[in-house]
Length: 494
View 1 (cartoon, rainbow, N blue to C red):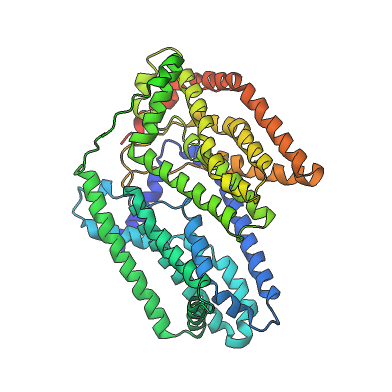
View 2 (view 1 turned 180 degrees about the vertical axis):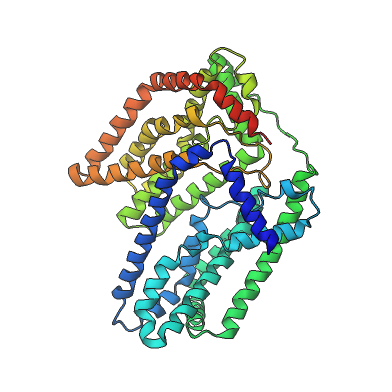
């Protein structure tokens, strides 16, 4: 227990001593605001759900219990952009007389007790108070919410297992796809699916406080926790001791970029950065996977036919590439910033090259959205407008981070590196995602969807056509802070 408390203390001290701690404080207001917003949203939705199914053939809690698997599946998906593996703090302790397995056990325990696993209680607590109290009393509500929390903790460890395996080998994506595909087949193919009845029985056991139900969940948590422990222990050992060296099997020179001179050289550097380094390759895989999943859900299912959720996912697909890579712009280059600064205007050409590469990369989500356009779930004009708006306005916002980022992100250390976003990065990323959604809602209400799409295209094109001007402005502001930024890059190298 003492070691667990010491790890928490050290984590807080590490954040305070971080080179970008002051910037993190700047973003706290936005993060607290978003946390309060989503908590209020879940409370409202839980209350609405309770009243919506009141007085039907089944009680509201019976309806929800039969679909608990959907809650767990949604929880699994939303963890991808927010949750990282809990092994980033192993490395500093490896030289101390602490067993590696014990250290990983405590980090996994901290992951299970993380506040992120409590977010669904804002939905289930008001829902259960309104629907369960009249039949099972307060103890039924407490037992039900405790069981839901344990299911979310299990889902947390299941997610960590999948994310860790996918990060090592992309083919492991078959594991979650097979599991959720099998569950979907079990629900849709039989005339009377046993999965719904099993889920309802599980929920009933949680409400009544069935000892066997709780023991089964605890046993499942223990098993998947043990698997995570063994897997992460082996991967951490291999990474720290450099057991597996990276070898480039196919050397691509991208000679077609020679015609673009120095900017072509930096475009070549950016492509090699994305496709050869462990951290960047992992991020690229995950973002393509998320866009593919969301595009498939929009195209081939009716789950997100609602206009609000559909717009949310479409915007997410187009802005996620920029948010993931450009919110940390220059942080990867912090590993070799001294070499970049040795040549006049190299940073300016680097920024232009980055803008070109990520502007072309917007074609990836656009192509993946083609099935949704063919099935007429999403209008072609809407996809074009969001692609242009993202390359213009959203990239303009994200490129401002080049001035303020002064923290180096290790290119090869993923399991044991503290590659955590700062408050300012989260603030800019949140604004880059939230502002387009709000703008679209306002424009659609005022002038209609088709005209709103044209307005988004005009806004995006204005930033695209003036990109040389605002990129030069970013470059000049960066150069004014270059010594401060270079000091931060050097201090944060591992």
